Image (cartoon, rainbow over all chains, first blue to last red; front, side, top):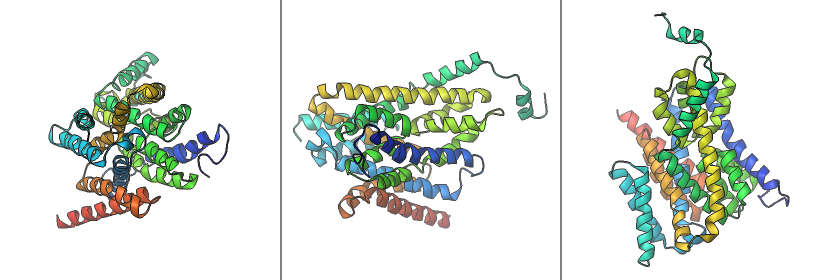
Amino acid sequence: MTITAIDTWWWPYAFVLIAGWAMTYPWRAFGVFLGGRLREDAEILVLVRSIATALVAAVVGNLICFPAGPAADTTLALRLSAAIVGFAAYVFIGRRMLLGLVVAEVVFGLGLYLGY
Amino acid sequence: MPPNPDLSEIDAPQPSFADRRRWFLIGASESVSVPGLVLCTAHVGFAGLAQEAGVSMGLAVFMVLAIWALPAMVVLLGAILSGAGLLAAAFAVALSSVRLTPMVVALVPEMRGPRTSRLAMYLLAHFVAVTSWVIAMENLRRVPREFRTSYYFGLGSILVVVNMVVVAAVYAVAPALPPAVAAGLFLLTPMYFLTSLWGSARETATYVAMLLGLMLGPILHFVAPGFDLLGAGLLGGGLAYAVHLMQVRRT
């Protein structure tokens, strides 16, 4: 059952509702339920945070290595260096999100301009 | 002075609608901040990705409203792009969203007042995602307890609405963008995740998990396509937790 499996206007919305909302909201509701019951420093939460972080990081790695659309025409070296330099700027210069983003875009833009 | 401050709060008069509205607006105005701005740029990136995946404008805007968690939205897009079925897509999204539970667990004691209903907490939980969570954990202490739900309702709902508009706007203007700018959009979402994951990390295990995930994702993409995200999450997260256990044992 893919998102194009049923040819009606509502199927993609149902797909998002089932694979999207119904897979995210229960985690939030479960958090309210646990509320004060689970201590914030509970050991199991370290494992939960680790798995979730690695999964999102894998998404990021794939976005950079295998982009779709216009970015697919750029080189891997350019995308990697833009992300690494931007991230390094974030980590080493005051941990400012906006700075990391701007530096990454500047490196990327310069690289494109210089023909890399 | 009453001996028990909690009881005195219960005896306090019901806060007026005008006061609630005032704190709702204060919360809404605090969505205009650096994390809020960066979240908007990440949604610009998301809209670009969605368009590449062949998702319609209406469906992309609906994804923002219904899911309201960028990692889950991007994972779902990835699943749609690779032609995954409903079950596989749902499983990947569910696994990417487990992290929402500990975030809500941490936020609930901060937000609950003596008179807060459980229903209100269940409704407000929908707005919990990285950005509103970071802003709330930082600012809720300055908000009087009986108005914290009003404040968070303002902050969370405005962030959702603004980003729905952002996604729709990108669909409207994207065809007119020069290719270099369109290519540059792709960097916005990864940079948002890299910086917010690193910034919200509490223990060494999270940093290790992030670095492992970054490498394992692309590697598994070749070795085990279709299982790359799940595999990187379980393997990278498990290894990071093992590092954490070794660290704990040493101290």
